[in-house]
Image (cartoon, one colour):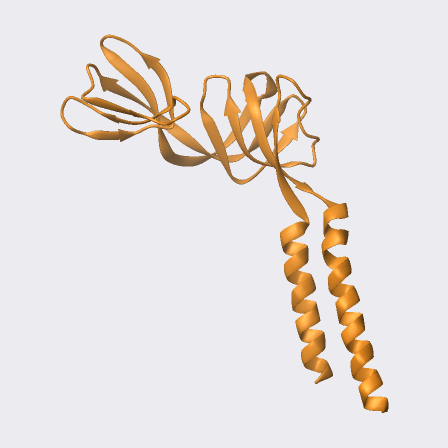
Amino acid sequence: MLRKANGLFTLAVFILMSLSCTTVKTVDVRTAPPPGHRARIIRLVKASGESVVFSGVGRVDGSAITGKAVVSVQERVPAPVASVKVRADGSVYEIVDRDGRIHPVSGVLSKGENEWTILVPGGTVQSVSIPLSEVVLIEYRKTDAALTILAITPVVALALLIWGLIIYSNNI
């Protein structure tokens, strides 16, 4: 009986640790300093509007962010286009060209009378080094020790209470 209780307690602590140890934060580099060199960067947005998603973890290395990222592919779409689908925030997410071909869009680099230059998501994974001067937003994981302690304390207290009740009931 005590083995099951210990196993359940260990499982509960492990789940709470893995969920509460890290939080995801977003920082606007134009108004606040970038995260420290230990921050694990998930995603960033460049000044051009391009979003870079890191496949592993990106790190701040001096005045640049380095890591392995999924690099979007640049594509030219001849104008005029048949339709443009826009999100509520005004960003384009899909273009249908005059031939009826659908182009998913992760960013629009330029729109002209003759062609649109877009970024197509889902490119290849490459090592990148992006200067901080080109970055606008950074999304990163941060370890939060206080949140972890707050999450584990009630579980430990409950486990000690149950353990004490089991020992007390065996002594009666």
